[in-house]
Image (cartoon, rainbow, N blue to C red; front, side):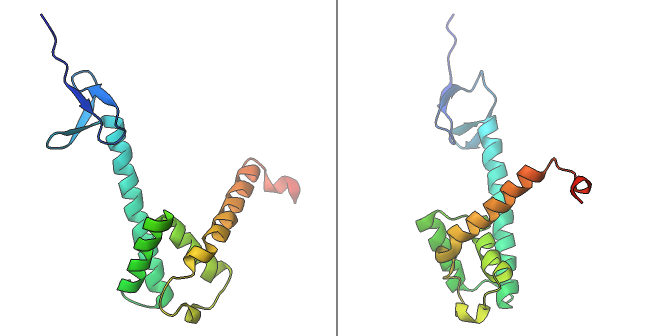
Length: 145
């Protein structure tokens, strides 16, 4: 007797698998994904949503507004589409420029147009902090005082 294989292609990674032999999640009507791929995509979406909320809260605080205006929303979408920036990257860039470098918000003219110009500087700044933290993680401060 022949065993019928139910070969499907993973919605996320694109690899084919037999849904009778591997754990899967049905993404939509006739779309399937490896269980691990679906979990990873779900976690990524949740993180992105948290990052978006953090960015929006920061922008509202920065501009002393109750909402993110359409101009800034358009800029965020443009930076993500054209430069492949992330919500987290844009947030850290604004934080770097206005809180760490103490630049004047009044020069922003109600937008976040500075982001493409300082994104790489901010990225280097936060990478250097991360690297310093990694190098000193196992050090005991009392030994050096």
